[in-house]
Length: 84
Image (cartoon, rainbow, N blue to C red; front, side, top):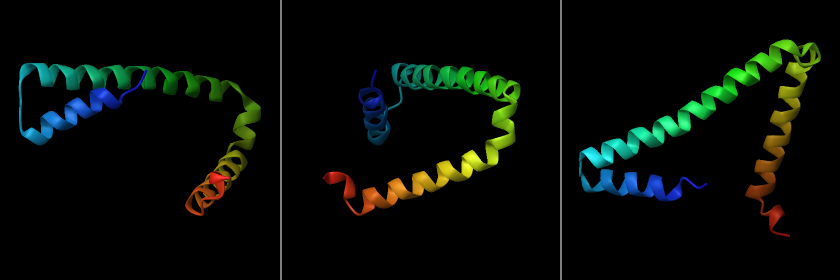
């Protein structure tokens, strides 16, 4: 459920300069385990987006609105507004 321990193990092994079959296998399995589900989601999302005409007509506006919301949230985090 959490990538932290695996990434920490890979990072520590890399920082130590160790290279073994186990570390390479761990790194490759983590990369494949991350990349394959993301590829499936990307392909599925692309197919859904191609089929939904309303999304295609409003895609630019949705991206602009999402960008503005993301910038506003980043500003709120920078100013510690979310601490309340």
